[in-house]
Image (cartoon, rainbow, N blue to C red):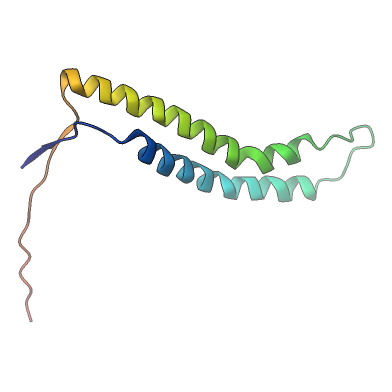
Length: 99
């Protein structure tokens, strides 16, 4: 059976995508925070720049991921109206249980 995706919900898809990006960035942020916390301070540099980058990285990735995916879904919906959506074939298999 052939199925064609005609429309993609841009808000729902972008919401899930941005949450996935934020969660995937979180381990790297934790490693970066721990790394910057245990790095000895330099006497001439009192900036905590890398620390804040690691704290805000999951939020930044989530927000940028949401807006970029929203734009991609919008573009897909425009293109699929004119040329058709992504098409794939599914096959239903009958599984026989043996006792």
